[in-house]
Image: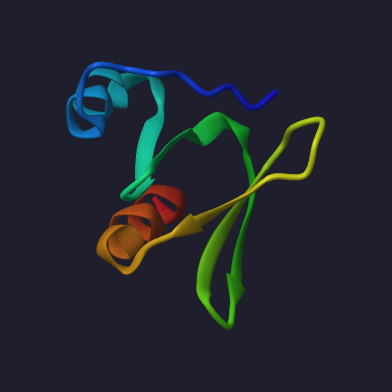
Length: 75
């Protein structure tokens, strides 16, 4: 399931605190659980992460985090 949280913290600090359990930053607005990623797909707009959830969910990968996400999933 997709869960949204209201945090009084930065995504950078969340990313750093939980990187050991598989959370990865893929966009300015998104941090995802890498274990829930079912597919990394290339579109004309760029890369998209498809999540293995009950409802279809696509999360964009921004240019800023592109190499980090690609390295994470290819290693």
